[in-house]
Amino acid sequence: MRSIEAITEEIAEVRTRLENIRGTETEVYTRIVGYYRSLRNWNKGKREEYTQRLPFDTLGSLAAKRAGKEESGAACGEALGDIAGYRYFYRKACPNCPPVRDFVSRLPLAGDRIDVDTEDGLSEALAHDIQSTPTVVFFDRQGRARHRSHSVRQLEDLFANAV
Image 1 (spheres, rainbow, N blue to C red):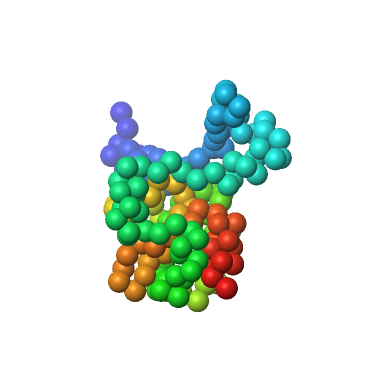
Image 2 (cartoon, rainbow, N blue to C red; image 1 turned 60 degrees about the vertical axis):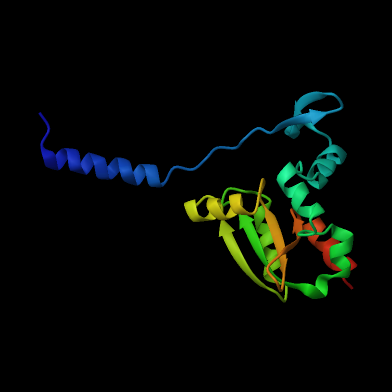
């Protein structure tokens, strides 16, 4: 029979191992030309197209846009002077998040970084209808969401239109 000290030691060792668990590479399948195929097997052009895709717009966010709470990219480009800050939603395991983080960190705007892997971060993401990472939501001075970006290319386009 094991002693309580041995069991306590074993529990501590298991907790340490659990804290150091890392995920494994995920295989992404998506639809292309009528059938599903692994993204890893796509050619360079199709992979580039995939990075430019936008997430599906749910009815809730569509209704918000129609109500004028969030503008499209072109309209936002004209009104960027009204942008007061941003919230950057990310995950630690997201391979596309670091380039977006670096881009927004160079912006002359105040911003918050929100890790959606935390309980508070997930609550904040749900409140803003965030469906993928990275997502940067830009807010005007009244706190209304004015634009969303999901990639460095979208951010570059947004700020190029503002000039």
